[in-house]
Image (cartoon, rainbow, N blue to C red; front, top):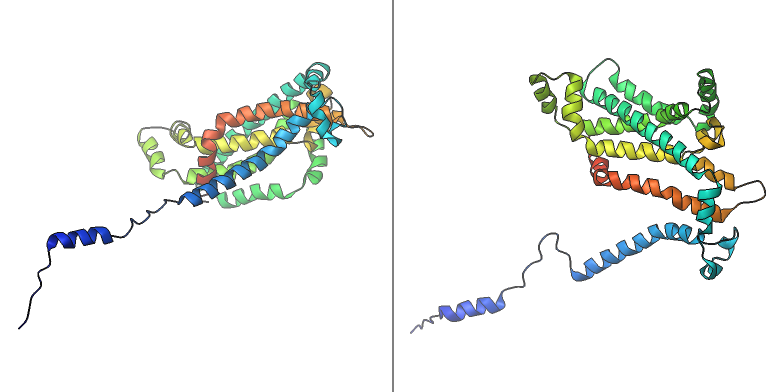
Length: 302
């Protein structure tokens, strides 16, 4: 005789509830340990990046030029005299004016030329347009020492030695090739339909470029501007060769005046370097919102 066992549905449901497995971790959800490790690595990396800046600021508070040899003694004699001396006894503000003229001029002219060049190569198919971009890269193969003499002769014939415009043109010859490639890659990511829509609306090619394309290319323009600004701001070789008047020195050249054949006023150099970092930080603050987007998007197509 066979017997049949009837299972209680309530007990079955309870057993399923108690035996249900732990909820699986979703994609992108990290454990607490992983999160702590990643945050710890980021904190250490940030401290490593900030240490040179903090060290420079610390050395700038030492009153003696040899305090860097015994940095522990700076704590007892910190002073702002170095900053006072740099601002009052040197040509700091002349260097500031020269630097702003050169860097902003290089940034403005360089970005305009690079943007128009990149747009032309990205949208127009003229004879030799591919070779043209490679020619721009070839110009970057020559070292500064090779270019120095012919550039000096050209600027001398044009009477642009010890002239801001001459130095700006020299810097543009360095920044435009790279920025043109950068902008060309960024313009490639903008759909061609936008250009077609501009032509349908009756815009000229330049009107389409200025009114429709450039507003969409702000991240790429920000990267090009930042690269041009830093290149002109920190360059030494051309500036020290083509600018003869000490009142027309840029910051990078002005720092060299604290170093002589037998002496180096490192405390004044440190204070000047801290002051120099202020305009760079301000410029970075204005463009940083678009930097990450421009750096990543410009390399998606080439």
